[in-house]
Image (cartoon, rainbow, N blue to C red; front, side):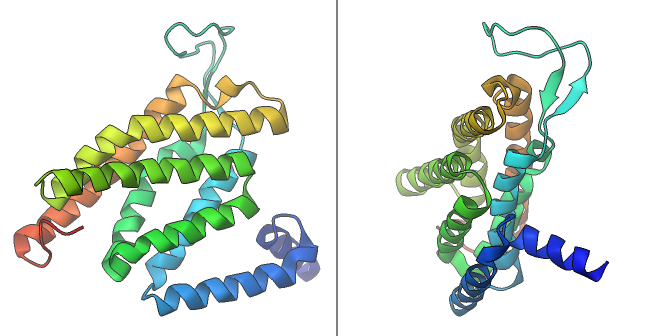
Length: 232
């Protein structure tokens, strides 16, 4: 039994490649040291682990048959009517925004370094197309936030909601299309099984819920005077 548990742990840690155990362990030790030296603590490690996990899940966790006998399609999309397919991880994507806020409290803009580490590990644990789509999606979100910070006078809490509202439809489209394309080439699924209107809507709702929670938390800190409303 112990051997089965050990083999399962090693398999999960190495993404099914036990020969990589030493390299993976050394890489994680180096990652831990780098994050710690940059000021990251518990939330930073959760954040760096969460992103590869979510990307991995879109490669291996099956879409759920949400409503039998009904299919919500893109306008003009020609698909055989069937079940509405929904990926369960779309429901929790908003947690990334919440965790990112806690990391930013610890590390300020060095959170971007953690994001880069997380995307890098995603290329090991998830299919490259999904990891690339994830990286592009995060880059789009950060780009819109930078635009709003540079060219507007909105306070930080307001900027979070606006940038999320603008970026979410774009970065969600990029990520879900990449995930659908990856599952198509690796599992033979139709691209629309993941890149569909239901997943798209729920993904955006999850992101916006997370953004609103973070915005509310930061607004309270702004009103209390513990952070500047014009913080980057």
